[in-house]
Length: 399
Image (cartoon, rainbow, N blue to C red; front, side, top):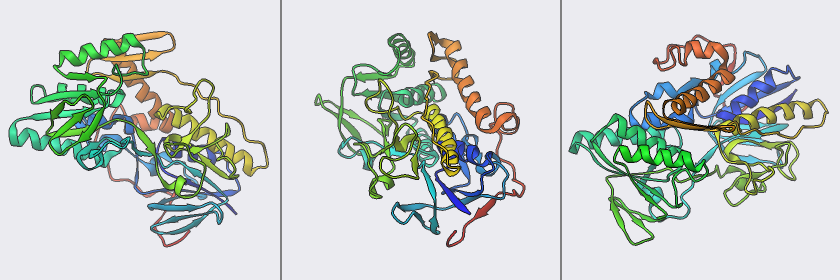
């Protein structure tokens, strides 16, 4: 029996697995992930700010994946991929494959800024968000607050600053440092202006057009020569791909993303697919490829799963027709911004649209059962003990 291996249980990997298994192929599917849970990465800012418990952004992979004897969930750390031998090397053994989907996500992009990796925390995944949460609580307990510098004025930086300001009002001095001339540079100018106004209402300082040159243990240096004192520096400045594809010799762009064709297959490597933050997906009017967003990762994962199924059946894979449905950002618990089609929403309407976008994703990945069990009818409850699942869950030395 042929084997399909999916690396990563994030937005792209889970959707790909769901698409493949529901087609009842004559093939085994193995999803490799280092943990038990799918992480709702777009909500990490709330965990970091203390507005959401860590359990609230974790969804059990067992519950999300279809029940099928040909599906295996392998808890393992991916070490390398050998495209010539068609094998994945993990800390629990070697996994041979016929087709592989790389959906390992990304790592923080520090752009060569000295000291950023050593002295700044990030929000990339749950463990890093929890570290930010603990540091904020320690600062509040030890000195009643502190000076927080957030590097990056994109969606993550803006949402994080707003959430900290709202849930720890008056405890911290907050500064956003943005290299671009405006915060939210890829967003509608009116929405970016509204967001800046809301940040300033919370007394958040915004340093625009000032790239960071150095991150020190207790300060941040700017290109202008200014130095900002910082008790905690949080880096939200960008994402680069997981290094495994480049180490495997796959064609990659300058940020380590696999160069794929419109069918999401790696250039020059039949049978190797990539989706999500790890893939450079070509698109009209996007010379740098599609942006690394959750909604696009879902679409890419779904299409990659469909294409692997088509290729396995001897049919031609189909190109991805990506649709950017819009963007939304929460500015605390009551305000937000949203850009959906020709509509620009602010205030409460923008916040509601942000929440609806989350609901839409949760429904898409888990249906009404997930919404009733884990999501907005009860989604912030602590996780319950899970019953045994028919999905195989292996931790052996080889597969």
